[in-house]
Length: 250
Ligand SMILES: Nc1ncnc2c1ncn2[C@@H]1O[C@H](COP(=O)(O)OP(=O)(O)OP(=O)(O)O)[C@@H](O)[C@H]1O
Image (cartoon, rainbow, N blue to C red):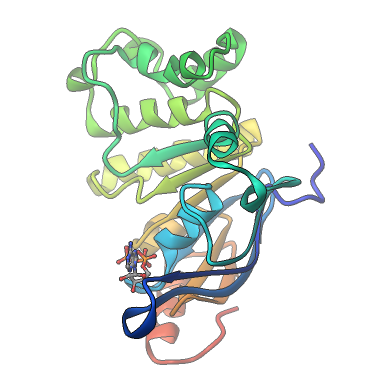
């Protein structure tokens, strides 16, 4: 992997919902890059543009202006069909609500993206994921037979099974108690450290964000600063600084 090219980046990214009097400027000329093999959290007050940024980075929505580059691929130049293929093959998703298929076993859920993409399952990679995520004994279980934390670990394995360029996680611990949430974040971090995966996570929780290697702060649709090697206290202080109107967080 070429480590000098970010896994994903935004250049001059803007998103306006609606027009005229009711126009909402959700993102304003955002420039941000996410390095390959890094775990980044996106934080900011409610309405600051976190979900909008993640949706644009993942090719789930179109920007009003600017570009999104996944590696060297400019998402804004792709038609719907190629964008769908790109999402299937090069992007992974982890959602707050797990979104597992109830009638499928854990293993069937994990390999589903390969089936949808018509690709053979890389068994060695699957084995590695299953071991790192501690799912070996659970592969034959249905979601209803798994704890919330285990279900989210299955969802993480599913997101990683195609070896995507980037995994986007949207509040992945939002439905978990703090013990299970901490465990899931530790597993996610292990996937980054040991498998070289790239994870971009949106969260409201400073403790969750502190599991990342870097926190990018958004305020009012703009990048308001970032914290490297964050601690929960540093993240809290950063959010407080945003609320009290101090501009940059470093
Ligand atoms: N589909 C939409 N139509 C109109 N406005 C929207 C739409 N989606 C988001 N917005 C607005 O854009 C702004 C940014 O929203 P976004 O959901 O990206 O923020 P967020 O930081 O993820 O918020 P939260 O933390 O509350 O989830 C908000 O003012 C929101 O109301």
